[in-house]
Length: 459
Image 1 (tube, one colour):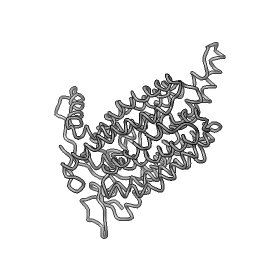
Image 2 (cartoon, helix red, strand yellow):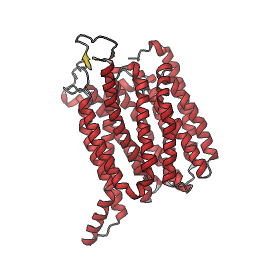
Image 3 (cartoon, rainbow, N blue to C red):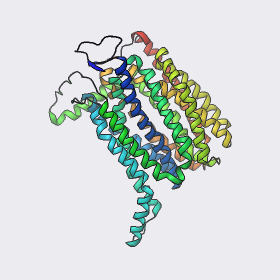
Image 4 (tube, one colour):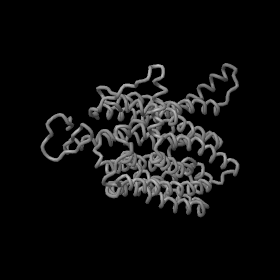
């Protein structure tokens, strides 16, 4: 199913990705394994974040701390760890490739941390009982928060390190002409995960938090490890040696990283798209559960609305992926951001009760999902191929800095206003307008560099 470019090409239609050549059967097998990996990866993401939000709300954590822990901590890992892992991955050469060794390392850590978060209520009660027996004054809530935060940090370490190379793996093994449709399928699988979790499991979180999170952790660890063992990478060009003396090599690496990624205004503008769009969706995403509860929306209704969101997005996903391949992701990103400007404007003015919140929440989810489907292959189409993970991590730096400040800032505003949550949509409106403006600027530069048919990434 996989052939090296040095071997004799198989008969019939084939597809190329680097030194890999696929027949129809080989391409189907690749997609099946990667989609299984995406199913387990998405089940992890679709469950852990809302369950963490629910547990923090259950512990009555202030909005400022809520934002710091659930957004700023992951952003800090992205800022520091993402560039290091991505550059290491780009330069790594091993019999298993340059991406898979990192995923084989981070997957068990992620699974174990999910299990740890799941059993946090049990651990907190046990530790509180031990502290009482030892005559130590300790609050079960504080203990639970400390235990959860420790496992959450461990989880985000594994997630950020894995995410830094997963996109690179897809870029290395999936033929570029199929990336839009592939990410459309990825999106569809992720939405199936979301429908399963939100329709059948979201309403059961208050009573079965531990069971659900532990089960998802075990499934994710087993399934994603299997995928890592089945997918094969091709061969890569040799990496040039660093000329600096060993004790200065790390300084040279940092300088080279920032020169290559941030010296060209065109790439900085692309990073700005990812940063501003991510910020635009962030306020509503992060505070959706406390927003819903402030209007009397129970978890079951919230989950059903999320399931409807994912169902609509699922119906659209492959079609959107096809449009991305047809028109180019940059054009489709502009369309999606323009649509979100309208949604955020509506949400900031017309949400007043549970029904209008659920309407706005579904529209937010569908349109932000449209953006994420469209932008999924943008980096692969605009960044240099051999250093894709490096440039992708550079985009993550801006997103991390924005999220580190945006989440606690939004949380502080909500605390000071006693929960005027429509400000989340208002913030999204302003940021989506800015994101649309910078995307238009990038599109104009993209046309000068050859456009959809003759584009060459600038050196």
